[in-house]
Length: 510
Image (cartoon, rainbow, N blue to C red; front, side, top):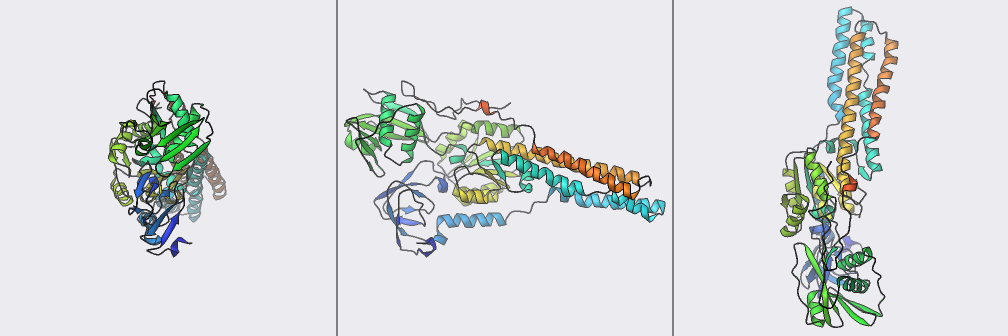
């Protein structure tokens, strides 16, 4: 049924992997939800019967029932959309680059033409001077430069929505970043394998990944990817079942393998030992044939290029870099320390992000995010950049720039292209104005007839337009892609691993 037809009190069935349509009270015993796009919490959260579930959250692997607490128009997702519209309407209009030169240039041209007429007493002198007052550097050359910049950005996977955005991003002085899915990968990666006595790291990873083939849980996906990266062959199960929110059980090669939450695994393997986890880490426990087999530790690690991007911004005149996230303080601080952001604001709701972005100085302020919860602050910032490779329609609609490639390094490319384009546009304008004013001064003497002047001003137009086309190409950003490590974490024989994006990653700064 259409979401607008839902009324308070309706009982709704939400199938596995579906988006929760309205805010509601959970009627099912429990359920797991991905709320990362709403709150910034990187790991799935478990809700129990009677707790509130927010619209926009993605249901896990179990069908659940909720009782509608609010209508679609009043639910969390629609409140975020309303906040986006409010933020967009509060934007000050951007004065176009060419408009800043138009009135002074016109005034100078009229003064020169009037002076020539007054001195010579010949009214045709007025026309001879004005013929050379070509407006094409403003009307054509600057837009050509901006279109060239937009084209160059699009070829590199960055969509800028207007020439005004190019001008704004070139002048950025503060940058704010969301955490989950922006500074981090947005999907948990295996960072450590801790086998129990009698097992080795490769063996339990292979068994766990084989069992997790039959699970849709986000941690299961991370375990499978880690096994594939190490070239481990996954075995088919003779029998497999998943207990929603708890874990998966499979019979593989005659052995019973269980992977899941500690309480669930401990109920089947009493010798299970709880792990000590670091900030932002989650663990999948494992039992084989009723005995504790080990622990797989996962974390949503920082992007390998994140530290290099932050360092590049600081070197290139961005005076302030901050993190605005809905995730918990400890996890946010840990990621900030890894990548070099020392100003971290955590556990924020969308209105709080908007307020902090509006108060951020110096300006213009750039905001980078990817989730639904980032849409309002992307709209409120002077320049909003959405990481659009994984969807996030609301964020992409609200942003001024959409990055189509799943790489934070494209933020650097966008700024570098914007700055080069603005330099080319300004130079083209000054070339045109300089040539025009010089020729007008010569024309005041009467040596350039009107017909000749008309032809000469066409040459001035051509020169400025050809120069403006330099925006189609330009110097690289300076962020060396070969200096950014993309190596996946690899458990050693002792079961240890270094998370990607750790402090030892190269910065890639020239």
